[in-house]
Amino acid sequence: MSTIEFTQAEKDILANKIKAYMAKELDVDIGQFDAEFILEFFSKEIGGYHYNKGLKDAQEIFLNRVDTITDAIYELEVPIEFSGK
Image 1 (cartoon, one colour):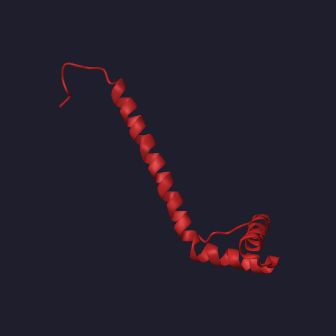
Image 2 (cartoon, one colour):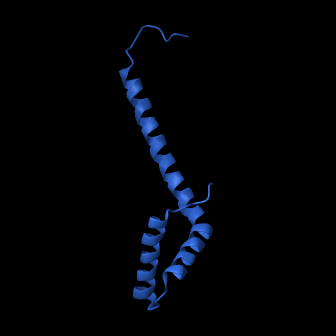
C-alpha cells in the first residue's frame, strides 16, 4: 500500500473535523498542529484497515458486475444443434 498523502487543504478540513470532535465529545480544545498530529497517527496506524476495507468493497462490487455481465452474455446465446465440442 502506498502511503496515504493528503493535500494541505484536505489536512485543514480533516484537522478541523478532529478539533470539532475533540471539543464536542471530549470537551478538549486542541490546536491545528495537534489535530494534524492526530490525523497523521490515525492515517498511519489505522488508515490501512480502512483502505483495505475499501478495496474489499470495490472488489465485491466489481465481481458482482462481472457476474451480471456473464449472465447477460449467456442469455444472448442462441440455441444450436451441437455444442461445438
